[in-house]
Structure formats: structure tokens, C-alpha cells
Length: 122
Image (tube, rainbow, N blue to C red):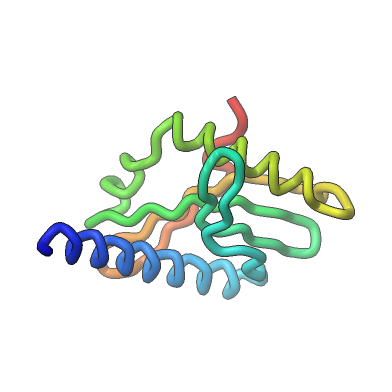
């Protein structure tokens, strides 16, 4: 039972972090296109759009930004890139002008730091 509760708490914390990040992008003039989208490589936390950009966002939460940043690994980045290719293949108008991969870090207080162009296909 304890393990199940811990899993539920982690899920809710991740969901709250994604919500904070989505609000930050919206504040910057973007709109959320998809949340927790599943592609061939796995899940993409957020897919964000503006008129001329499409952003694939990996959200990481930690007690501070440094701890959150350490949770992003190369294998995970590669899986996100594979999923992004799947998403782009289904875009009716083709990819927009700017496609990037951001990492959004959320600290224990709920503050958000966005690292634009944090990674790309290897």
C-alpha cells in the first residue's frame, strides 16, 4: 500500500509541475497543443505552439533546479526526439518554421526555469 501511495504522489507532483510549466509558456504567448502525448519513442510531457514555433518540452521536478536538471539523460532525450518525429509526421501542414526541444525545470517551491533548445536529435 505504501508503494502505491508513493507512486500516486509522484504522479500528482509531476502533473502539478507540468501545470506550472504550461502556465509559464502561456504567459509567454504560447498555447498548449498536447499534454503527455505518446509517440513511438515514449511520452512527451508538453507540446507547445506559437504562430511560428513548435516546442517539445520535457518537464523535470526536483528540490532545486540543479537536481531537476540531473534527471534528464541522453537516452530519454533520444526517445523524445523519436516521438517528436512521429508527431511531426502527422502534421497536416508540415512542421512549422521553428522546432525546438526545451527542458523545463521546476523546483520544490514551484518556480519554473525554461532551458530553450536544451537538446536535439543526436
